[in-house]
Amino acid sequence: MNKKIIHALVAASFVASIAAPALAQTSTTTPTTSAKKTINVACIQNAVETRDSAIISAVSTHATAQTSALSARKSALKTAWAITDQKARRDALRNAWKAFSAASQSARKMFRDAQHAAWKKFNTDRKACGTQGMSDRRRRPRFPALEIRREANQKVPDTRNFLICLHPTLSAVAERYAQGA
Image 1 (tube, rainbow, N blue to C red):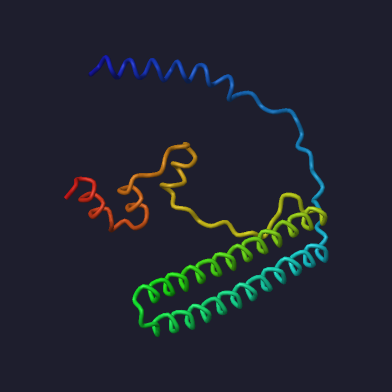
Image 2 (image 1 turned 90 degrees about the vertical axis):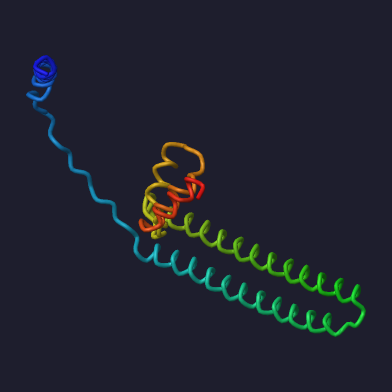
């Protein structure tokens, strides 16, 4: 026990003797003041207006396309259920759902493309306004446990840790799941 204390004191004094001269040095440079960047407010407001107007239009177009796809599905399913032949009815039902799925996918793709184009144009307009490092885009909060794994370039987290980071009260359930019960 005494040897451990003596070794710890010797190690601490060694570290202190090396660190003390480095900490005693003072900086002789004077801080420089940098001019604040001015932001062209009217320019960035126009860029925001253009971006948000394009996104509003894309949302409206997407809603209209989804509504028409749902209406077409409803009428196709009603017509399909009126068919008396079982094989023909099954084919008609399958075709109705395939058509709805294709129309819905097409609407989502058009929306994503329009939204991407709006943000891309906004970023070029923003840079032209002189706000290189600034953006008003909100970053989504992430789970801390998942973020640590992403920074460490680890693989997808296991279910137990994912449940624990979702909600602390799920830890008991996650423990039982990990034990295979």
